[in-house]
Length: 248
Length: 248
Image (cartoon, rainbow over all chains, first blue to last red; front, top):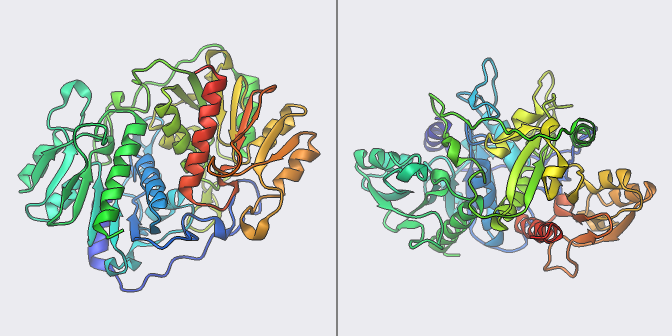
């Protein structure tokens, strides 16, 4: 649900100016705190695609799946992209105790502050995102404008917004638990979009799905019950497609 | 500081039995929740090194640096390791608002529940860890027994416990901000350990440092102000050294 709120916020509140928050200060006590210069990618020396990454919290059950986000950032870094990270400055719709898989009653968290864990503090309010400033916008758990990269369950959101878009969330049958969310494909079709069956990594028969008309790249990622390095590699293939679409 | 509490807990409270918590249940509302079978590595089909990963929260300022943890898990997955994840079931010593880099007053969090975000729910109380059940114990922000893997600032803890151990936290001079925590090397030497200068990745002149007598592998990781994919690759080299020490 947080992902969908990202969509709404990005479409309604985008402003032309991007002004990232100031870098983090060293903490007086404990914790390992990098200097402002140590933040992710801010000092990347190579010119490259300008990519906005939009997060929606931290952790698979109530926010952005952090391994997906980390993999995307690793591959963007390897591809020389210049990344700016955003998240909506709103309360989380719900908070989950990840050790129990159940709602954490009475607890509130802020989406931007939680997303800042993944961003290592270098993050801006999503209201400041302007798609025109970027070659690609990445929503690991949501949807964006310009050239798109969508992974995991986010293709449902693309299907809701882009009429007739072609996306993939992997397989369409559960196959004994390997694809526990296979029913998502039916939701995508019910929304009038086309679903293409695909695998998680390029070592499987198919690469990530590319809808060139809508400039949407999709891959199943953790929609499949598989090993983490395969998810990591599949996201790498998707990032490379996006950077190619962005002309880099 | 959370990292040091991990150390104390692991040495005082280790028990011979490991009984992981039951898998997560699907949530009734919102969030993307995998089935119990979708948890990290639990169903890895290949036999391999038995590795315990000990986390101490989620996020660089008040817990385990999640990109380091994710990279370690990706490389362990690629190496066919069988991973079990632990964290101490204690309150965090402090909670930091990562978007501001400042303590979050009046907020409390549990180390195990926060670490479960990285572990995707498949996590056990650190009190149940027995080093004898594992070929290697990994503490991205702490210290462990058996064959060790230490990264980032954790080598300080090894220096405190293993007399004369050889470790690295990277360079010994700040070099204009590239190594903002270079002073850590002096702390290590003051504790009677040997510090070896090293780079972040194997594309630099040196591989991660291996102390074969104490079976400790160290690499600077985010001690250096560098790009994320170099940190990722450096941790990969370290994981490969650990798996080799573990006979895999």
